[in-house]
Image (cartoon, rainbow, N blue to C red; front, side, top):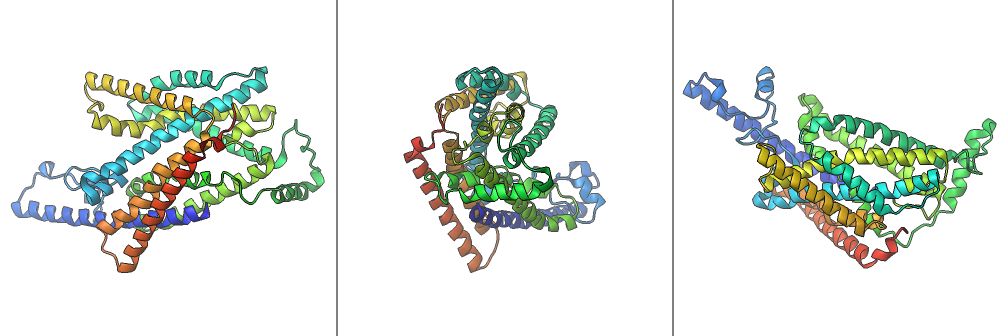
Length: 423
């Protein structure tokens, strides 16, 4: 995970350097256009080209580089790829859409696993995962029809609170156990000493390497699925020049802190719940009322997150099928496309219902690694004038990324059955 983080941060830094260069080009072009307007004596600014947020630019002497060459489109990862590779950038936009849909696929596997465990705990009934999968599809299909992303805000806020509650609760269970657990006998007078001794003993029994270690290559880059795609839009959203200059350092610290929490959280939970812990961690919690609440809360959170996760990918697909929002006919076509894709993801989930770890690893290998490690250095070499050493390092990272993607994907596919997590 540490190696994946270091390589990702290097790649992210190069992508931000590309953004800076392209933004400066935009600013220079805008200044030239303003000079031309002045020479022509055109006082009517309503007919002048719109280069991003021109209103902000006129309030601030420093031009806001949130612009595209001639259409006012903000700079994004996909747009930088278009400027570097032209039509070849479809690999980037398609990869981003595939990753978004892949995350939705993991949701369709994750929720049934959780609800099976919670139903068993609440009612003593061993229900098929397929039933919960079908029920989830019936919920998600109407939600993916929503075309105004603002209407998804309440769902996203609710999901965020439920996820935060779930993370803290799982960490509490991992450290302290549950009231139904025989390990829940910590002396209040020596709580810190008892916890440290308990964790130290559990850490010592962890295996150094698991037989299915190769799955983690793709999984580690799956963790960055949203980070690299949102990196440029987040940089674009920063207003003041001072804050823009600080953003790369802030991104470095925030990303490193999040990864440190991932490592801490994963290690503590692995040590506490044992070597047989599932990819869907909440399905591995010891039986207790709190565990059941966490499983249900996480399931609701993921159900609410699904339409927001699918939205940008659906927009990419619908733009290519000419079924974006507009006329009633296009809205109907969009709903048909969204329904078909959701049902197709449900079919894939049905086939891979017991292989969540494999699915995550394969997505990270085939899609996540190219997006995070391969494309940004290539874009940098294409659009930024850099020295020989930098270009060589970029190409080296591309080669490492391609090798890691191929090796991880191959081992995941050829050892598919080793990743089964039971029915």
